[in-house]
Image 1 (cartoon, one colour):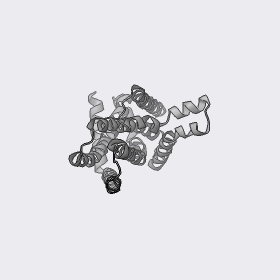
Image 2 (image 1 turned 90 degrees about the vertical axis):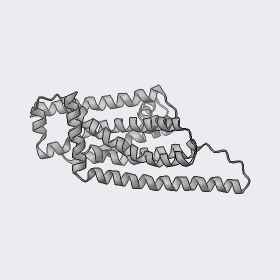
Image 3 (image 1 turned 45 degrees about the vertical axis):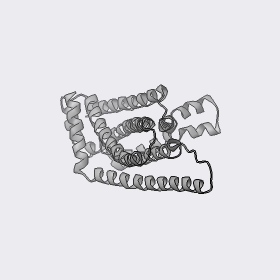
Image 4 (image 1 turned 135 degrees about the horizontal axis):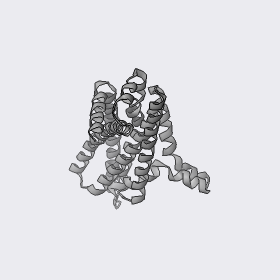
Length: 255
C-alpha cells in the first residue's frame, strides 16, 4: 500500500510540474463556466417568459437544468481524460525511466494503481472545480441536493472507468500523441455504442449497446442510483486496470 501511495503522490506532483495540469484545469473551468452561465440564463429567461404569458410554470429544476449540466461535464471529460492519461506510461517509455520502474522491487499492480490513482485524484480536482458552480446554484435556489450527489458519483465512476482505459492505452505506446488519439476514439466509440441499437435489434447490438458509457451514466445524471450501473463501471475499471498490469508485465519480460 505504501508503494502505491508513494507512486500516486509522485505522479500527482509531476502533473503540476508540467503545464498540462494548469492547461486542463483552466480549459475545463472556462468551458464549463460558459456552459453553466448560458444554461442558467436560458432557464431563467424561459421561466420569466412563461410567467409573463400567464402560463403555469412547473419545471423540474434537476431534469431541465442540472441533469443537462452534469451531461456537459461528462462530455468535456471525454476530451480531457486522454490528456490526463497520455503521459502515465508513454512518457516513462520515451525518457527511458520505465526501465527503473521495471527493475525496482515494486510490483506491477502497485505501479499501475499508483499512476491510475494519481489520474483519478486529478480528475476529482476537476469535479471539485465544477462543484463551485453548483454551490452558487444551491445558494440562490433550492434544488434537491441528493440527486446532485448521485450525479457526481456517476461522473466519478465514469472518470475512473475512462482513466483506466487511458492507463492501458498509455502502457502500449511511447508516443503521447498516439496515446491521446487512441484513448479519445476508444472512449468516443464506447460513448456512442448504444446508437447501434437504433439500427439493429439483434443480440450483438444489445451487447454493444450495453457497453455504452453514456447509457449507464444517464441514470446517475437523473439522480437514480442503480446497482447495475455501479457494477458496470466497477467491472469496466477493473478489466482495464487488469489489462494494464498484464501489459506492464509483458514489458518487464521483454526488457
